[in-house]
Image 1 (cartoon, helix red, strand yellow):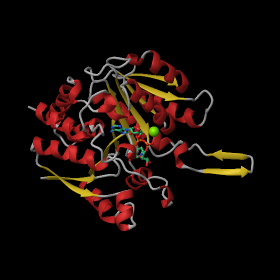
Image 2: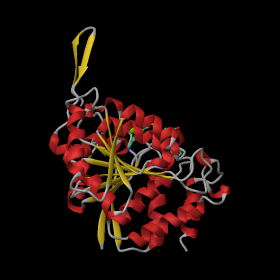
Image 3: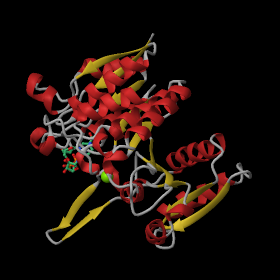
Image 4: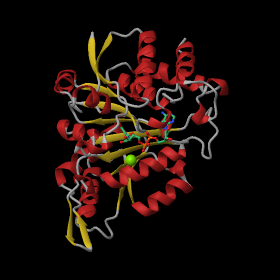
Length: 332
Ligand code: NAI
Ligand code: MG
C-alpha cells in the first residue's frame, strides 16, 4: 500500500477532495491518503497554517495532492504555496494545457506544456522603497536553477517523444539575467540533438500563443513569464477550471489545480473538479499507474460529451457531485 499526503484545502477544496476520493475508491488501487487541513481551515481550528504533522507526512510520503488553499490576509504569511515550494525546493512547476475535444472553444487541439522555473526570478520578493518616489525589485537568475529546469524540460520532451522545446526570455533587454537563462538553454540543447530547440522573446511568444497556438509544444521559461504565459494557455483551453499542475523536484511532487479556493462558490456543489482530477491523473502517472491515468482521462473526456453532465462554469447543469458520479460511471 502506497501512502499519499492529501491537503483538503479551503473554500471549494473539501468538495474537490471528496470528488477525487470517491473516484479513487472506484479505481481500487493500492493507494491510501493521509488527510490534513492546511491554510485557513487549519488556522481557524489550531492557529497554525501549516501543521508540523502535515509537513512530516509530506517528508515521509514524498507525493502529495493539494486542494486549493486560502491564504489568510492577516497571517503574516505571503502564501502557503510559496512556503511549500521553499520548504521542499519544488523547483519545477509543470502545467499541461490540453483541449478537451468535446468542449467548444475558440481554438482546437491545444496541447502545450509549460515548464516554469519556480524558485527565483522576481518571485524572490526582494523589493524595497529607495525613496518615497522610487521602488526597486531584484530579479535573480542563477546558473544552477536555470540548468535544472531546462534539463528537466529536455528530458521530458525526449521521454514522451514530443516535438519541440521553446525557451521564452527577454534576453535582448535583460542581457545578464535572461541572457544567462538563454545561454544555458543553448548550451544544454547540444546534449539533446534529437530534440528540436528554439527560443522566443516573451512578448512575441504571447502574441504567437494567441495567433498560432497549435505551433507550440513544450516551453521552458523563468518564473514570471511562466506565471503569465500559463494563464494564456489556460485561456486557450477555456479557463483555469481545466488546468492541472505539478510542483516537483527529483524527490518530491506536489499535485494541484492551478485555480484557487473559489470562496464565492464554496459549499454550493458548484465547483468544477476537472483540474483537480486531472492533477490526480498526473499523480497516477507519476506513481507508475499510466494505464489508470489514461482510463481516468478517458472517463473525463466522455463526461464532457453530455452537456447535462458538465458543471456550470463550462455551460452545464451538473453539480460537483453529479459530475463526479458521471466520471465514475464513465470509468467502465
Ligand atoms: P480563484 O481561482 O479561487 O477564483 C477565480 C474565479 O474562478 C472565481 O469566480 C471562482 O468561482 C472561479 N473558479 C475557480 N476555480 C473554479 C472551479 N474549480 N470551478 C468553478 N469555478 C471556479 O481565484 P481568487 O478568487 O483570486 O482566489 C481565491 C483564493 O484562492 C485566495 O485566497 C487565493 O489566495 C487562493 N489561491 C490559492 C491557490 C492554491 O492554493 N493553489 C491558487 C490561487 C489562489
Ligand atoms: Mg498565476
